[in-house]
Length: 147
Image 1 (cartoon, rainbow, N blue to C red):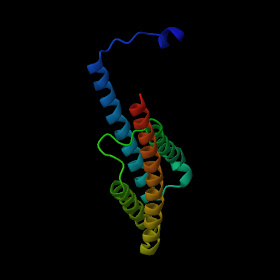
Image 2: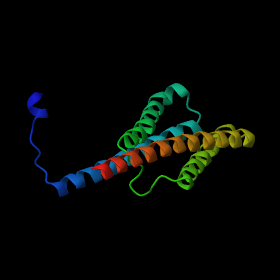
Image 3: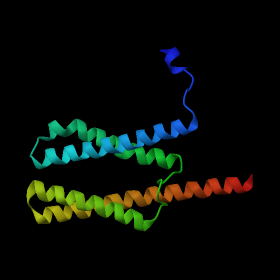
Image 4: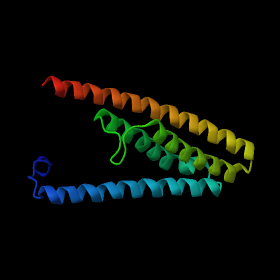
């Protein structure tokens, strides 16, 4: 096993970037399909025990990716941290949860309350993470200016 771990890299930088792009697309395709699978199972009334493993994986990835990005002071490839962006992501999450609850329970009030709760939770967590990343970015900028 040690020999396998110590092999030299045979790809150049361009090929490595292509590998990273493929892995990136693969990760998000897998994540999206896993979420869709859980949603479909919920709408068909599958028991929680049947979905527990998939939901656990979604939860771990949903927490691990943003934490890993924040630790490395990265927000997103295409955007800077902003309150407007946080509101859009939170609204999309809220609509998704409201639609799932409405499909599962056929209760508009419960769907609205679940959507509002998801918006508040998602927006507050994204805002906290945004402030953390901005603070770390400012600290890095100060360190670079001092050098």
